[in-house]
Length: 438
Image (cartoon, rainbow, N blue to C red):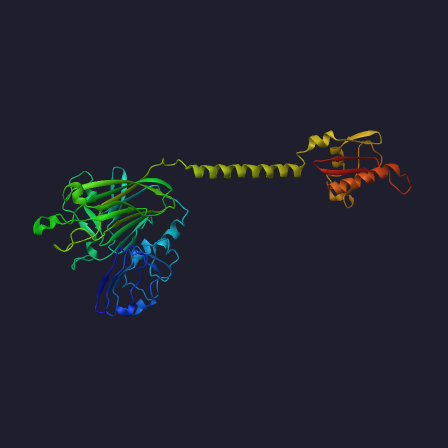
């Protein structure tokens, strides 16, 4: 292996496959280990290799991207394909997809219920749908200015003359009312993944539009070329060995495929993957998946909340009502606007005259500090009474209530010049215990 300049290994199902020993690859320039279920982290020993391109798309790596990786190494596909395991990656130049998601959705904030992309083409409005332009960039990683979607392109074209300018291809003409969707298409060498951000949770219909525009000309038998790729939605393969020309009966003819998808974390993933099948070298052309347009529409009514959100809102409203009622009741109680019925109906008899408990409380100035004689004892002036009376207020508790009952009983029996006369006593359970004495 010491003479290898290019090493490509992909689609191994064995979990025992690992990174090759760096010492065996002294002159390696291109290393493609995509889709091999690789785990762990990128070896530090790779720092000393002469790598120009390293592709690790579709593995299960974790840890930090090494500091020595820079713009000359193609790793965008790795970051996107391993979204969850690499959510905490650092030391990577530029804004990575996890950062985009955190900035605009934070995993919770759903804002959109649809998505329309004219892959490789301009802004266009068809049938009341506005398709976003996707002809601005030929980079491997691109986030739309609206921050609603992004794509990742990975791999290398088999043709030695192909480059990133071939990511967007022109068609020679598709005769349909929606032809503007097929004027151009986006193509990628190995995998092309679109991500829709901040979608409301729920079920959606995903519409994918295709037209073969590369293997289309008759000269040099190019029209005999075959493009074969797989399609994954939310990680599930929905089409295997899909051949556009075979599906529609020739080049420059369009077809639309419909699929159902569920969004439960505000993120939609659509991945087109070339598994190495189809025409490669006869003649060498642009391998990889190709797509003309993407349309994502909800299967639920817009403006109608899901059951989960209805439950949350009802619970929040009820909680707010209960809290407001308690605060209002506490305020009215504080102001003395409630409880008057019991206070008016509770009667105490003082020197053969009857008074409501409400009258007694008012006579103390609502237990105002200006009438306080000692702790919890207040002076009061009652109607038809020549002398002041003292009102003692006690907190309601079993121990204290029993204690004051004994005091009252003793006060009724004891007579002495140095003892005040006990006139009356009562208890209002909604207020506390009361004793009235002269």
